Image (tube, rainbow, N blue to C red; front, side, top):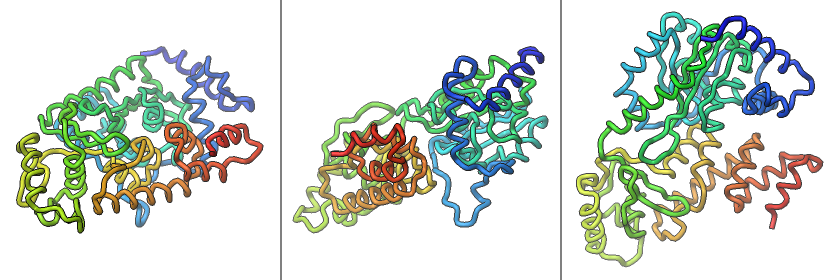
Length: 396
């Protein structure tokens, strides 16, 4: 544990930096650059000055559901007793957030339980940066790295007596970030080993993900379609990948006639052709696919399902991270073409309603064809802003 006098000095230095009228990224020598960047974003988010607790997902009528993560929730069921023990023995509160910084699971020691409840550091608490300002959950997801937010580095005054350590939770099969784990306590108990503890807890969840079994399927539908089983690419034809995408979008299953209609529409393709395709798929996937109706018998994740879920939850940044090209660009399936049109329309609507230029600039850099992001940025960024010239280079 770090001496109390050094911690007090650290708080005082942070407060001087916060009060500085010339605060800039040059202060990164005395403070993490990611913290200063987060302060700037928090200032521009117009967070209510009297906010003392994170909004709750069930506190606002008609609030869209938080993003589901079947694998993460299943893994937590396996390791929750171990995580609860860590929280209790360390006198900390431990929380797991989804990719939009909404807490989906938490455990608190008796020393931290009341404080956690008061600020809604509990299941359902929404800890997005644009809602509560600088915090470790959001910062870790933003940087995709472990982070520590100490005392008055937090934006919201009600948690400036806390120190928080967070680490990303990475799917060991797909290497996708599924969420974030955060360990928090009072600032006087700040420990230089706190980040290692958070990373250790993340590894506990990742080991639980491995223990879920050898039946994990991941489908990539954007840009270059692929199917992975337990992290290994499976050789399939484009038509077979289309079939698996349809089944992923219809988890309750389809009979042969329904699948034929979804895949071929009115095209003159025989039922026998589809039966042969399904026979080949079953030879490759074995018991992972069952019939009557045709459906998966395994945990299935897909980049396009993540985009859909992220949009359901209002997580534009998470949706754009997965969207990196057209969905099954060559498909002629009427079902998949309709779904593609729908998701692209929803994504464009979310982009045109976006206020965060940071997110849109990053999306445009990765996906220069994103005309909707370009148009929205031209609306948001004034002509005399330094970033305006960079945006114009994406115009044809």
